[in-house]
Each structure stands twice: as C-alpha cells, then as structure tokens.
Amino acid sequence: MVTSPGSGGSAGDLKVKVYDPVKQGEGISAYVSYRVSTETSLPQYAQGEVEVIRRFRDFAWLSKKLGEKNPGVIVPPLPEKDVIQKYSMGTDFIERRCHALNVFVNRLCAHPVLKFSSELQFFLEAAETAWQAEVAAANQDKGVVKKGLFGAKKFFKGVASTTTSLITGKSADENEDPEYAKVKTYMQALETHMGEVYAHSDKLATRQRKLFKAAQTFGETLSKLNEKEDEASPAREEFVKVADKLCQDDTVEPAMTKLDLEFVEPMKEYSRHVKSVRTVMADRSAALQRLHDKKQSVESKKNALAKLRATPGAKEEKLSDAEQRLNESSRKLDEANDRYDLIKERMKTEMSAYHSQRKQDVLATLEGFAQQQAALAEEQAKQWKALVASLTAGA
Image (cartoon, rainbow, N blue to C red):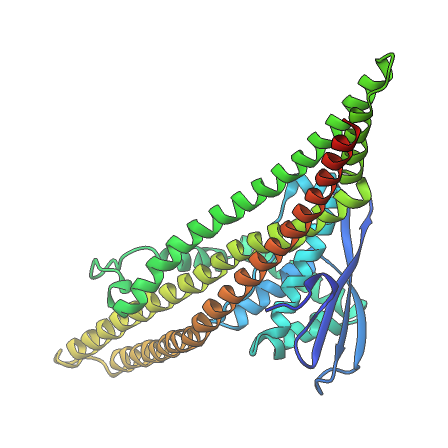
C-alpha cells in the first residue's frame, strides 16, 4: 500500500516524492515538469539524497523499460494520456497528474523486484545530461522500430497471443492450467466492475460538488430577495448565514480536493491497475503461443533432417545445414520455454500480492471516504440544528 501518496511514500530504505509541478512553455509544445526527490540508504545509489526534474514522457520511458526487462511482473499503471486536458493545462488536471505520478513511483519503490531495478535507479538519480542522452537514444530507437522490420515483429507478437496456430488450428491457451483459465475469466470481469466503480465514484464526487454549489446559489438568491423586501426577514438572513458558512471556498474546495485525490483518483488507479494485470496475462499468452510454435518448428526440423538422412546420396553439406537449423530451433525452443516458465512462476507471486494489496487499498479508500462523509455530515447537521434552534427561538 502506498503510504500518504500526496506527501511522498515510504518503501523502507527508498523514499520518493513527486511534487512541485510547473508548466513549461506555451501552446502545443507546452509540458509540465515535476521535481522527483529521493532519500535512500540503498548502497547502489551514489548519494543518499538526490533530486531531479522529470516530465511525463520520462515516467512513460520508465514504465516501458520496466515492462520490457521484467516479464511476468505487474508494473503499476501510469496515469493515462489525456490530449484534451494536456492542451488546456488546468490546475486540477496538473494536480491530479502529479498525484498519480507520485503514486506510480511509490508503488515501484514498494515492489520487491522493481525497487532494485537499474532502470528505476537511473530515473531517480541520473543527471540532466545523462538523462537527455538516454531519452534521445530511446527516441532514435523508437523511430527505427516504426520504420524497420521490428515493428512488424512486434505486430505479429501481439497477434500471436490472440490467434490460433496456423499449423494445428488450436490456441496455445488451450494447454493452460484450468485454474489459471478461471483467473483470466475473473480478471476480465474485475476489469469491468472496477471501471464501473470508478465511473460511479466520479459521479458521486460531481454530485457532491453540485450540491454545494446549489446550496451556495440558494443562499445568494435568498440574500437578493432580502434586499428587495421592504422588511428584511430574520429567517432568510439565518438561512443565508448557514449557506455561506457551509459553502465557503476555503471549506468546500479543500473538501472536494480531498475527495478527488483520496477517493476518486484511487478508484481510477485501481481500474488502471487491472489493465496492468491483463497486460501481463497477454504477455503470458504470447509466451505460451511462442513456445507452442517453437515446438512445432523443432518437430518440423527434426522431420526434415530425418527425411534427408534417409535419402540415398544426400550431400554432407545439406545434412550439416539441416542439423544447424535444428540446433538453432532447439535453442530458440529452450529460450521460449525459459521465458514462459519465468512468467508463469513470477505471476504466482505477483497475482497473490496484487489481490492482497488491492483488497487492502480499496478497504482503506472506502474507510477514508466514509470518515470524510461522516465529518461533512456532522458539520452540516450542526449548522442546520443551530438554524432550527434560532428560528424556533424567534417564532
């Protein structure tokens, strides 16, 4: 669980805080920079305390690298890119994104594997020159991927996880553990349900904001009515006072910000987190499909070699080439098997930790929401009771 994400979290000997968002530039090229401060006693870090400046694409780089280097590990989700909000650069959008990025990094710092990754360390302590060189190299590689054959390979890798084998007509997923198949079905349903929970959480916060606004407007309307009357109404004046007190900006805005950051945004993050789990599941399916295909390839090479050996007068050169192709296919089969086994074993630990953490986080979020609502209701009841007593006394 991320402790106090708004003020920086703690992962034992690695504490990180993302804060002080600052808009840089104007127009289409504008972006927001963030300070990322780190305190650590981990020996691999050059300094115990370091602070760097990063922007959203840098966090995206980190997320991508961690996913590539840690198959089977559930990488916590980044806040999604919102092009429309990005160009408006409103204060609310900037605050929410800063909060979400802080939660993202602190979840990494609390993860037993990702916490010690060289990618995270580089992100947290690399000086500007070294960092910009890495970003430039990453962008250059990205350009090559778009133009080269690797882009096609990446496409077919994605297809492999959802299509059946062209040789057997069967999906490799059919060979999965039946219990794991149940988990996949459960996660599909959970993704839908968590999305609905977030959507209704957002509606609930919007409704509460509108309710405050309506009470404020009601008080203003009564105040104007009093001004038009020949004789002011004490009752209306008391209503106006209560409405003003309940709906003061310095009372409402902090309450609504707290509701957004400690209730709506966590529910949104939990919804995104399910997608991160499903991404790892897709990687597992792709790894299993690749393993299945490599087995078929080895069998094909074995049959070709056996057929060649049975052919009278077969040239030694052809036999040697066929043996090399078989050896290469066998090597790739071993690699595919190792990758699938790694993902499979890691997911056992990852899924168990994910479910346990999700339950704790959701419970803590709901408890915090209930406490805030109780406090707000108590204050409102106090003001309305005082109003009733005042009106009764003046009757």
